[in-house]
Amino acid sequence: MTTGYVIVAAGRGRRAGAGLAKQWRTVAGKPVARWTLERFAGRGALVMVIHPDDQALAAQVCTGLDVTLVHGAAERSGSVKAGLEAFQDAPPDKVLIHDVARCCVPDTVIHAVEEALHTHAGAAPALAVTDALWTGAGGLVSGTTDRDGLFRAQTPQGFIYTDILSAHRAHPQDAADDVAVARAAGLDVAIVVGDERNLKITTPEDFARAETLLKETKMDIRLGNGYDVHAFEDGDHVILCGVKIPHDKALKGHSDADVGMHAVTDAIYGALAEGDIGRHFPPSDPQWKGAASEIFLKHAAELARSKGFTLSNVDCTLICERPKIGPHAPAMMAEMARIMGLEMDRVSIKATTSEQLGFTGREEGIAAIATATLVKA
Image (cartoon, rainbow, N blue to C red; front, side, top):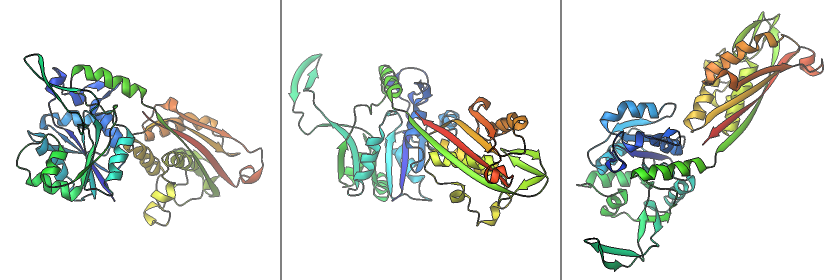
């Protein structure tokens, strides 16, 4: 089953204090909205509903992520409806609707909502109320309220897409949340266990709490390795890590046979558990014959970013007797850094020989091995 995600970010958040709306303010080094988007990026189609005045801010926050921006309405339910309508060209089976101000939502909460939708029309996280509850008037306690059966609602709130879209289309007024809209349409909504970390930034004090939580978030560090080999054939140059090097032979391959770039590309795919170049660019497809390997590497780097990862560094070793790599290594590092959008000091290109042993030692071809590190905060 496919899942779409709607991030509701059209509000003004006036209780958070003067200045920028809270979703565009920085916490722990990133805008609140960026943290939230990265929680959902790469899981499925992603829509963020924004105020029309925030188009430029939102576009900047979405840099490198595959996000559709939609203008919202004056009330929350109207904004959610606009986000749901944005999926009409390719409707998902399920949809999760999340408040942008809940930027610390753990993966476990998202997963629990998605799992509950296998057996329920709707599901939402909540925490049981454990404190005593009072009513008050004029600054004095006026009574107590039974806390049994009371819950603190959270997001994301998930639903079967067609059900919640119909419910929003039929709902005549605003509602506190999407569970209220769903229940008004007669949908049952399952409660899954929420998380205290899934706070909603509402007041100025909440920014400090979110900062602490985000800095404590365990980093997701991925390592991938890639290995590639290409044989020599007749020619007068080779292309290695994007640099054309004069040589008395060429490398044989379906594309431009850039063995170094292929190894780095496969290392990135490996860190993402996304297979290898052949999965994304099949050699059986004639459109890739003679293609520049920059296409493959750029795709891998952009895929990593779309899943919320930062490409931290790559290290590539070319294994050959000739041509000599050392004089060309700085140009290779610069070109690879350009393609991947990295600083040059995060790209290592080096070479070794096989002491005249094996096919590389007999100068029958060139091999390359690479490692890539991806980090998601």
